[in-house]
Length: 428
Image 1: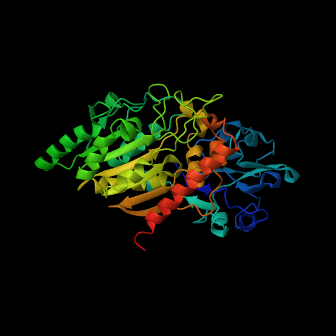
Image 2: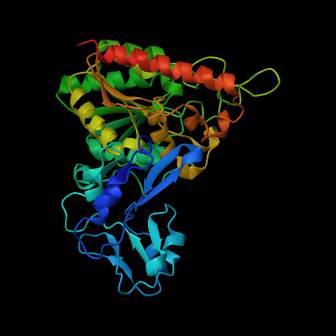
Image 3: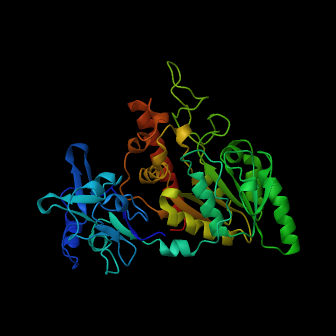
């Protein structure tokens, strides 16, 4: 099961603001223990709130010696203050810091999403849009049965398994899946027809099958799911040609910014200054010397039916774009460019695979937008972007960066965002 949870945007939470805490204290439920905590580190210019992530089966349930933690009628884990001893074991096992110890009362406390209220009081009261309530129900209700096998071949921590599952759950089983040699060769791992191609002819092969379906009156989706290697470099000409002709193909590129399947080599989508095995770091070279190719913009500028960027960090946004692409492909070409972190190639902890995509959006490194026949619009616009250093600091592939390289990448990010901003204003 998945339950509503609070979504936090750490960027924008001002020091000293207590509105969410006040709303939590006055929420009208019993007992009136604080269920949200303010975290401020002025020396680090950091201010946010800490609250429960509403895990469906959290470790806290297993360690409580008195049974004070249990699920309430709404499905949320709640603490019974009458039974709680305040031992703090639940606080220690929570990896997110979502449970608080109330030392003067010898109790523990956590958010129960204002059980009994339609909307969480803190999210309703936040004047800075730092807190918002995310409801999982509508998202899950739109999914079709899972057509992927229980076990897949992806590396530990790879975000592509979740992307592939969500994509196919959204599209359903009336799909022919086309794949090229890459990290994501599903072949016998899915319960839909699979057509394996070379890296250079995926789009052209899918074009032929889609034309046959059109001739016979079938609306089966021709889904091309492959990496940036078979999209941005080796076969960009065939992808561009299919887009220009308006072939009835849904093309999803998962971008891990290198040839990860063959040993982490440089590619057109590799960002400036990033380490790969062919853009080494040493006394002469400092990673890739050129900026990344913006493939999603290039395809969108073909005037295709639908083009968009998406990432796991914004799941609802991604699913909505899959749905729009599903409709758009009935009459022409649709393209989704997904940022898909590779913990191995990006040299980062596996547990950051989703968090790093959220950070990429928050620094405008990977803006979320969509384009309908060349008309661009943001689907999530960042009001106060964080510096790009917050993003590159999460990965060791940028660990060699000096101030000059950081400033150069920041300039690249800023210029690309300004260019995208101009595109979104074309209709105004």
